[in-house]
Every structure is written in C-alpha cells, then in structure tokens.
Image 1 (tube, rainbow, N blue to C red):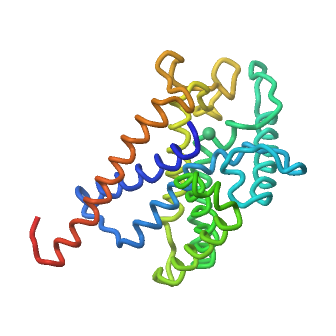
Image 2 (cartoon, protein in one colour; image 1 turned 30 degrees about the vertical axis):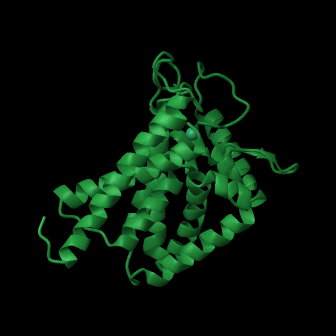
Length: 269
Ligand SMILES: [Zn+2]
C-alpha cells in the first residue's frame, strides 16, 4: 500500500472508532482531542515504513515518509532499517531466508505496535506536555506528508517541518495541562496496527506472527493470497479504496460534529 492510502486508513479508522465510542459507549471527545487523535493515528499509520531507508550520504531513495524532515528523517530511517535487520538476524531460524535490508520486519510486528503505544503513553505520562509536543510534531509531519502528498512534495520538507511545528505548538498551547495523555499513545499504536493490516491485504504480507515460530521460521510473511490481494498502486487502491475510506471518514466526522452543534441549539436527536 502507498503512503497516502496508509495515512488515510489511519485517519478513517480513528474517526470511525471515535464515532462508534461516541454513539455506543457515551465516550465524547472535544473537537481538539478528535483532531489530535486523527492526526496522530494518520501519522502513526505511516510510521512502520520508516524502515525503508535510502542512502543518506547521497540523499537518495527511501520511502516518501522517510523524507518528511529531509535528511534527518532519512538518516533516522536508515538507523531503524539497520536495527530491524539486526533483530531479524538475531531471531531468525534455519528456514528464514537471508535478507539484505530490514524493510517489513520488526516495525511490521504486533510487539512493535504495542511497544510504540505503551512507550509513547509512558513518555507523555512522565514528561507531560513537553513529550506531547515532540510526539505531535513528529506525527503531524508524517500525517501531512501522507494525507497531502502532492502539497508536501511541492512545498518541500522545510515547509512541512515548519507547519508541523506550528500545529504542534498550537495544540500544546490549547491542551489542558497537568495530566497524562493516554490518547496520544493509543492513537499512535492504533495507527501502526492499521498500517500492518493495510500491508497484509497487499501481496507481500507482513510477519504478523513474530515472535511465534512456524515450521522453523520466525518471520513467516502473512498476507492475502495473490489472487485476491490488492496490488500496490493499482486503481483498486488509489481510486476505489481511497474513495471508500474518504466517505467513511467524512461520515464519521460529520456524525461526531453534528451532535454537539445540534445540542447547542437545543435540538434533540
Ligand atoms: Zn509497510
């Protein structure tokens, strides 16, 4: 799946989930909390592909998402890729094939998703708003790169970085202080999970079972069979899937915004 589809899937899942909680569990969120959760989940849905490094020395290659913050994120992606490859070799069994890069390994596993969600929650609980602003800056940058890919490409990484910084600062200034922010870690973890599921419906698959060994393989790639799997970049992905996700996201957002507006005018629904 391509970057923009991943980002959109994160935003859609967060909005749809929030709508369901709002409707059926009486769990209501402020518009700012909703916007923050949606942006973080969209950014989180790109995070696992930060294992696709380019060549930082020649400033080439890498996933689009690795270019969000210019060579800084390109370098970060290279480090993530090397660590993933290290973990692959440290845990591989006799029937796991040799690899020369770590793409679609560690960052595409369930333990990684949990670690990111829990780690971010712990970070925000320990350092409060200062951790929040860092996480927001990073994830909003990824979300911008994914959701508005054409704009981001034209604008370049300097503008993307500045806009993310401004958005993170605005949120920081308006968030209630003095408490943990479990929402942010949750949104990031959910985003990573949505990314993995998205990759599962494309041909390559992901090592979703890791670290459970199957037939002397630790890194069994699991995805849909080739016949029904979505081809990356095909019309099915870029037109049909994106259109469906956009409609679901807009419906959920409308549903979430409509109730408080109607209530303000004393209209019962
Ligand atoms: Zn991926």
